[in-house]
Amino acid sequence: MATASVTGGGSEQGEGRDRDMSGRAQNQRPRDRYGRPLPHGSQGEVERVPDDAEFTAEEGLEEAQRLLDSGYAFTAHEVLEAVWKSSPEPERELWRGLAQTAVGLTHAQRGNTVGAARLLRRGAERVEVFGPTAPHGVDVAGVAAFVRALADDLDAGRARPGDGIDPSGMRLRGA
Image 1 (cartoon, rainbow, N blue to C red):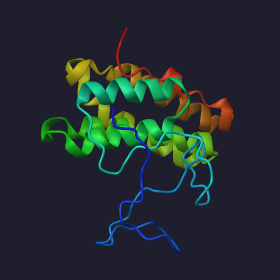
Image 2 (cartoon, one colour; image 1 turned 45 degrees about the vertical axis):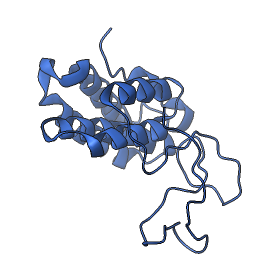
Image 3 (tube, helix red, strand yellow; image 1 turned 135 degrees about the vertical axis):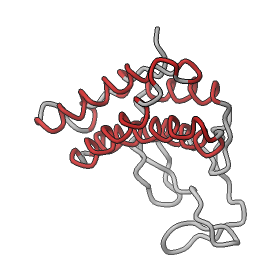
Image 4 (cartoon, helix red, strand yellow; image 1 turned 30 degrees about the vertical axis):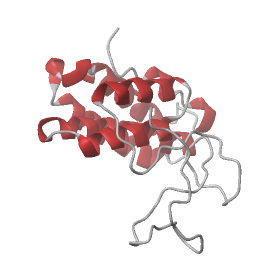
């Protein structure tokens, strides 16, 4: 599993984002449970996923579900994004859609209900095209139904941002 803490790795600490020696942005600051950056030196509330993490599809689904079940949609998004970046072309859009649904959940947890609803629906559209034959046993119908219902609840004011958003309801695989 590739969620070890990020170490210095040659980046310089200063104003703005952490960057490596080539100027590429790095993911080094500790985060709160909703993925918001905390000041350098703070104790992070979530596991970190290194910028260069790689997961197989199976590892990514398992780890992302574990994180969703624990309420960590932002970190699940990072795992799904890592799989997306290394996926073969036919299934890249599936992983992109799954990552968008997880970041949509993150925005809902943070209180950005308008942005969350947009991301949730966009992610649902991306995964739905794979239908019942989606690779790796991904339950695209279940994922899409969950995130569309949440987007509707956010739009109607029925969902409470923060702890009122439970990402564990999104099941990446069917029973």
